[in-house]
Structure formats: structure tokens, C-alpha cells
Image (cartoon, rainbow, N blue to C red; front, side, top):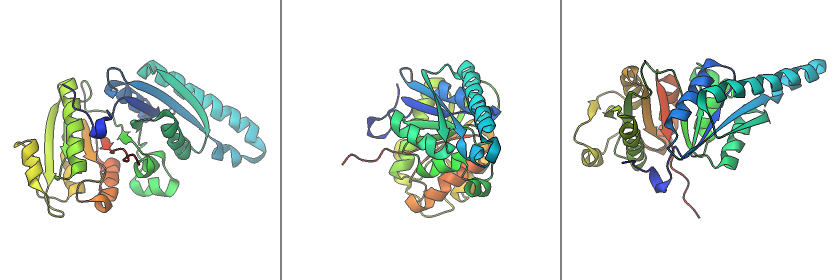
Length: 265
């Protein structure tokens, strides 16, 4: 049985994957295709970065041509990997252009490859993954190559009793049921007080780590294919704004940040 995400919106129903010619992007496309729901839609998007052309000066026309060719080649490579329902070739700043595409596609999940940037470099350079973690209105998948075997063979989810973390746990459970994955629920108790009662109601079987959330989850994630965290959980909105981002950048495996949709007004 598939467990629905918060507010009845299935995280994997409308998946947008940003791709370039890097191996990390192809892995993101592969995982996005794997995770989309049975009736879900997958759109691949490639962005020609116009800022690069602007700085080329007199060679702008030539550089624009190369950028367009590179973006098209990225789509062709990813199509063979992911077999999407649609593709979208765009031009502009990659981060803001993908954010616009998320809105137009009404995406429930956006997937990208992290390209190995550290969090500091990501913030300095405005890396796409960092921008999406900050600003995407939907859930975010940062895809990394799994340890081996069908993805995801093993799933870790961080829970602290908050509504957001429990929503992430429900999504993780649904993925584990779909693929027969090993699922581990972890509670890090080294930060602020954790409400264990909702965790006990969810399952009596969970790992309790005495470390702080980031260090605990990153350390535990070394033996998993996918780490799932909630956006706005793990010790509060202000804390997780940094916790989920730091976990996503530092974890050695793929990270799914489950973000609940904004309530209707």
C-alpha cells in the first residue's frame, strides 16, 4: 500500500529533474525515473547558462551556440537514461530558471546532482542545489551514486516527533514498501529536546543516536542509499533550515528533503 505524502499530494507524482552533461546529473535522472509514482510524470530540464555567454564579450554568439548544444546534448543523454514524459530546453540563470520551471510544471519533487560542491562553495557560487534547498516550494532530491544494487536498497529517515519529520517518515515508508527496501528510523537526541511519543506511535523500532542531528544523520547515512528528512522538522523551522541543508550537502548518499506544500488561502 502506498502511503500518501502530507495534504494528499504524492511526492513522486510530478517530478522535475535538472540535467547537464555531468555524471551527477545522469544519476539524478536515473533516480528520478526510478522514484516517480506509477502514474507520475517526469520532465527533464536543461538550462543554457546565459551568464557565461554575457561574460564572453565579443565571443558571445559563439559561446551561446556552444551552450545551446551542450544543453541539448545533456537532454539527449538523460532521455536514454530516464525515459521522461517530456523535456524542456531553457536559457537563463540555472537556479532561478529551474525554480520558475518548478512553478510552471507544478512539480511535487525536483531532482538534481550536487556536483560535489561543499556547502560554503554552494552558497558562494549560488549553486543550483543550494538554491533549490533554500527556495524550492516542493520536495528536493540530491542524488548521489548508490552503494550498489537496485536503488534504493536501504533507506534512513531522521525523525524528531515533529509533524514535518513524521511526514518524511511516511514518505520513506511508502518508498520502502514500493521497492522492498530496508528502512531504518533514526532519532538524534543530542540537540534540543525530542518528542518521542509520536515516534513510539509510529514505530517501537528506531535507532537512538546521542549525537546532534547533522552529525548523527550524516554518520549513519554512510551505509544507506537514501536519507530522508523533513523540511521544518528536526528541532524546529529555524534549526532545520540549516539542518536539512547541511545534511543534504554532507551526506554520502542521496538525500530527499520532504517539503510540505503551503496551505491554501
